[in-house]
Length: 175
Image (cartoon, rainbow, N blue to C red; front, side):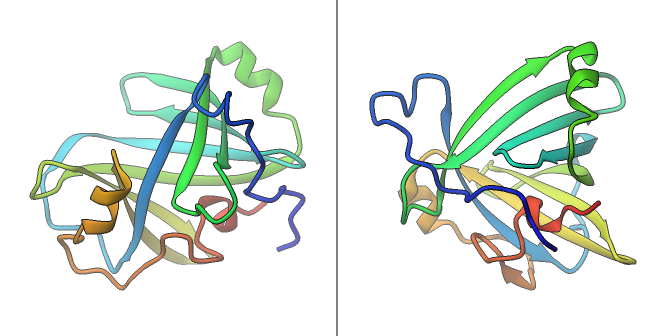
């Protein structure tokens, strides 16, 4: 797929890195199926649009009881730190969402389910329909690099896809 999406790395001035954003550290795993575990909160339907020529993602998140609209931007903090993202989120109204929705971009729809891991961590599993195939991608977020490095994923998985080219949500999106 030809992409008009920009590089995932952009220099962020060191005096501004944390002013309006937070550091996101996550690991991702490709599963063979949904886990046989109880859900800890209602699943969400996510509809993301990656806006062409930018680092922006427009998100519609529906948990069956309420809908959130977001404009988000994720960037690598610095070259070589592929495990840390600079993440900014602006919560917007439905009317503001409607202003951004017509902009050119690529869509990804997924169902996100939430599970508790054995150490009390939240494990999110995204179910994505792609070319007649269902993908289940688990994500776990961490407070520190040390915790992320030491983590042992508790369930069977096909492979870890953290930072593997072709497996980002943007890469899985399509027109």
